Image 1 (cartoon, helix red, strand yellow):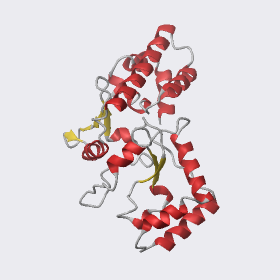
Image 2 (cartoon, rainbow, N blue to C red):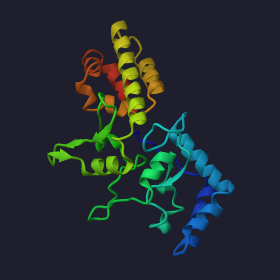
Image 3 (spheres, rainbow, N blue to C red):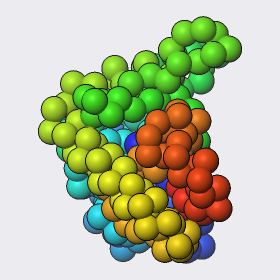
Image 4 (cartoon, rainbow, N blue to C red):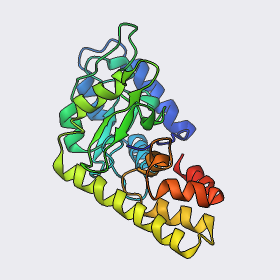
Length: 241
């Protein structure tokens, strides 16, 4: 999972969404309103913007493995119809993640979402990666001396530790990133910006945020890059954000 940055929509599209939001407030069947809206030019712009946010490969914003096929409501529109037309509540999602999540949306006792929203936070603050299995797991929280509760919830709902094809994709990406760093170290890391750009291009699954974070920094060859070429490490960390 990678952090995605949400741009502002064109004013006309934002106005359209707000008008729709007001019209569906308290509506008995938000699904009908949503289906009608999806045929409009304004919603076409929303989809195009989400695809641009997801990157050149237009990957799902949850698993970053499959193609993002449709709009996903972080707060599900069925139980929370007032959020159906809120731009900040929309993500790009693949069919499989959409099926796993459905209307499942666990909340804390303080009504805080227990799922990671990659458009508002760094997923790697709650999630961890296992290079051996390729699975995503909950990150250990030193403050509570236990795995991140929100990480556990996200992994459980989206089944991020039970999807073999996805895990293999993550493993391949990790091996590709590690090999490119080894090659750069063998050559003396002569161009930090070039290395960062090449790694970003090779990062199909948003793993740079993990590799150039506190956990990846303890593993080879990333630890060696940090130690031998701190300027290259800084360049890679900058593009991983």
